[in-house]
Amino acid sequence: MTLTTFKLNLGPQHPSTHGVLRLLLELDGEKILSCEPDVGYLHRGMEKMAEKLSYIQYLPLVDRIDYLAGFFYSELLCRIVEKALNVELSDKVRVIRVILLELNRIASHLLWIGAFLMDLGATSPFFYAFREREMILNYFEKLTGQRMMYNYFVFGGVRKDIEFLEDIQNIISILPQKLNDYEKIITENPIFKRRCINKGVLEKNVALDYSITGVNLRASGVDFDLRKNDYLYKGFDFSSVVLEGKDAWSRYKARILEIKESIKIISQALDYLSKNEKLEQKLINPINLKLDNGEYYQEIEAPRGIASCYVKSVGEDKPYRLKWRTGSYYSVNLLRKLLVGEYLNDAIAIAGSLDIILPEVDK
Amino acid sequence: MFVGIKSTFEGLITVFKHLFKRAVTLEYPEKKRALNDSFRGKLEVNGCIGCGVCLKVCPTGAISYQKDGNAKVCNYKIDLKKCIFCGNCYYYCPTGAIKITKDYELASENKEDLILKYEGECRND
Image (cartoon, each protein chain N blue to C red):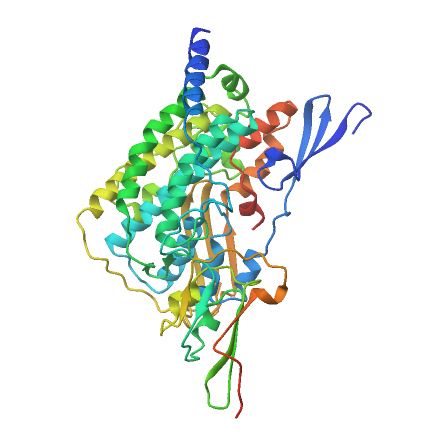
């Protein structure tokens, strides 16, 4: 640090840091010379807690790892247990899970669109995005009993058969029209474009070096989507959104396109459910459930990149060790690289475009 | 430049269209949302046989009970300060003694009000 530079704390309570992220920036005027992310303000000990709780006691808590996409984490824990006990899911359970995961992905991306635009100073899209997200959350509440902490997936299946399919139909018929509305306000807006195009350019090799996954990686031109190989998504026809822009604008566009792909998946799933098959599932009795000695690993494509869970069991009714891998954690680390040389105003746009969510980072 | 002007104009039209729509929020507490049947609020217990499953599935240890001289369950307590409304006890109760209600308002002036007591006091006669 020389006499001409100074240090600035961005956060932990700054409105555009999405939770409680502290960025220690070294500035020369408005230019960022270095960035040091400081995480841990939302640490709840999710991994340590698992060592003291049985699997079924831990299941409701994992929704809280990323409260915007809770289904993905309960899906992971359920899949670990199902894998360990060699339980195959029936087609209907698979489809129900896919519908809920994709709806959850849409809700998460919608919130991101609102919050990102809010960071850039546009207030109206925030309310529009929340209004549409509200429809999805209302549906979740109707089905599972709560809006964000669902506790709906259980080991070997789902808590109860899916209901209120007309609500889902309603959501996916309204959403494309609303997405057009957003695009009218946002996509070609000259102010938005000037703040996003060529800002926070993430090169392919940098993204791979920093273990970036999910939409951020695909917006840098790497076609890598775990859903393509996931047996949960077997039989669904969809394409993974890959854009070559590498900047904040293409990350925005990729999320809009990904919502459209999710709508496609959901409508295929609804077609399947219209056959009215009976729900068949082999539920695992969770009381005194013990996993065999060994290590178990499962990964899944969450809205913010690959989420995975590692469990080491020593044959007890609790995990011996449990570890989560979450997409945002790596995105926060990327800020060290992406923000250097940019201006302070652009820091907000760049950090926002990576879709960082702090509970997921701190766990 | 033309695209810029056009898109700004289009955006403004979309925003102004919304100006004349009804508000979607309600003024709590005068008006409240209608709740669904599956809504998970406070718990209610009646007819517990003391099998202990709820203690095994509760993630936070919010539930406690005792048994009196006749092995009857008494002093069943649910600590709302600890309860996270996950509904595990309700889902796994084998006799259906635990029920979820739609009551979600927890604010109280007295800490003791947040401990729900069911199944009566213990008697050792």
